[in-house]
Amino acid sequence: MKITVVGAGNVGATCADVLAYREVANEIVLVDIKEGFAEGKALDIWQKAPIDLYDSRTIGTTNDYSKSANSDVVVITSGLPRKPGMSRDDLINTNAGIVKSVTENVVKYSPNAIIIVVSNPLDVMTYQAHLTSKMPRTRVMGMAGILDTARYRAFLAEALNISPKDIQAMLLGGHGDTMVPLPRYTTVAGIPVTELIDKDKLNAILERTKVGGGELVKLMGTSAWYAPGSAAAQMVEAIVKDQRRIFPVCIKLEGEYGINDCYLGVPVVLGKNGVEKVIELDLNADEKVLMEASRKAVREVMDVLDKLG
Ligand code: LMR
Image 1: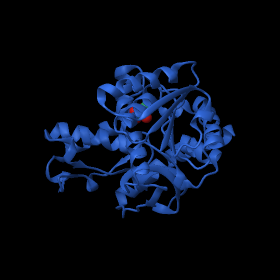
Image 2: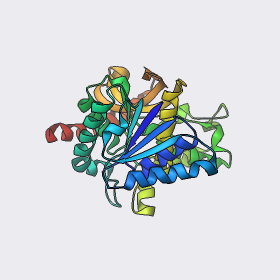
Image 3: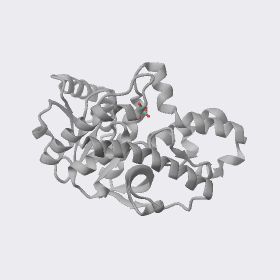
Image 4: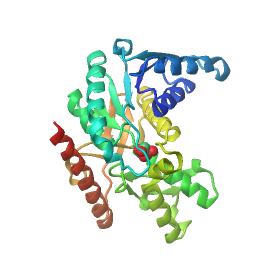
């Protein structure tokens, strides 16, 4: 198995590191436009192999996509991260062109790859990669839901003083402030979360989750990378090992949830063909309103991309 991670910045390098450490593939290629950067990060990860005892080979290249040829899965992390005061959508002008040209190179050398987009604004960059790649929607997806649910689960674990391992959660919608966490589908070792925490505390956690990325940007002056990198690696692992795991993933909706032609996070089964199945939850009236608000917000930014051409 061969995996390529494009963008050797914080998120891309973390993703490659997790993939190597977990031995998800025997060959991991890291690509970056900055001279020597990907080579250095890949070498550093490789030099950690004798310490952490893995044998995945990591190779770096400065924009030579021929080294990524015939990858099974490609993760696109390229583009600028946001700075304090910016929304993810503010990145569209810069990142759309970057994701377009990266996708062209990816498809040229790995026409059968499954593509996972991590660049922001996430849902619209998934749209960009899907448009450019001309691949079936099941092979071009965005990573956000695993990250957003992880934040939600981490906050809950802290509030309940329990292990995050026992918290299961689902979330829908765009990767922005209109994301739709679903308390009705949140359980702690099988117990509905609503039986363990009072409404106000839970609402505060839901609100904090929605702006979870922004909280970190404020603290660090740039975007997060450990959880985003690990989340992307978890999607790669599910595909490469054909695990058929259920995760919230951004995909083009074609009628599911009554929505057409919009890229949004929904629960899917991830396996060797990419998105094996989109799961449709029976949303209640309130959840439908929130999903519609999220659709509108993403559609507006998709329209900006359409105008950019
Ligand atoms: C995140 O949620 O951490 C990423 O989308 C990066 C960001 O700017 O918030």
